[in-house]
Image 1 (cartoon, rainbow, N blue to C red):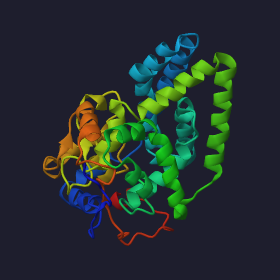
Image 2: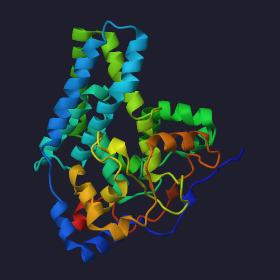
Image 3: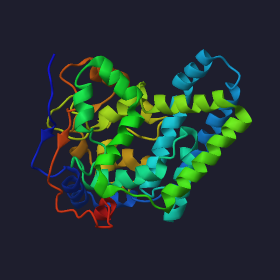
Image 4: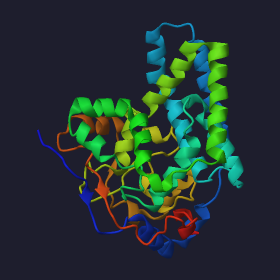
Length: 331
């Protein structure tokens, strides 16, 4: 079995900033796709309500029913809520930043762990410093990648516990450590929600929500999203991949990842329009069409490991203290 020891290091800048400039130069009309989508908040309310209802319905059920419902049903609205958190992180729901913080905190409720605002703080740096190991928490830690290597069982465990591995990564990103009012509010609101679930519905209901969260980002076809976005599964030179498959319909175009990185100020509903407006930029890129196929390939392909990522030391001239985000580059 092969042993991997390092990422694929490149000296070039990440591809999205230049492609953004090229797209806007050739198709200036795409700037009209930039905006807010307040109807995303309706998705938030609907998915949160659905998860609370399902938690109520399974609160007296056997553990097999709880686990099965979480895997086959609960993972989907919980993953959709994660997409909503992502939209709020980019201020793509409401015009006022504070309302987006509020929306992210509400969307966070069924996930049990207060991560929405911390995710925002680290995710925006993922866009600004893609592939820079000490700044991009989307890249695995060295110990993490060496531990899992390319073992199928290890990759299964890694996906099952993915939220915890991702949380550990923030420790290395010491330059980005943020503990602000939004994070504190997120923690307090989440604690109140969790206590209310236990008080009114009981521990099994809380367990259902927790399992739905673990499955929605872990050992589940939806968990293949984390592999789809930046892992070098089908091309050793292409850094970012989109997914054009049926799950985009229930998960708010989550697969349009190249499009999102190119224009982070475009809300989820307009990402397919961006692809259609600039086909010559996207049709040439490789992409995924099946999360199930990708999940199986990732788990059992020995040539794919956690080191199958592109990394760089160059920060592309972007200052860590610069308050701007990649969104501003395209307006």
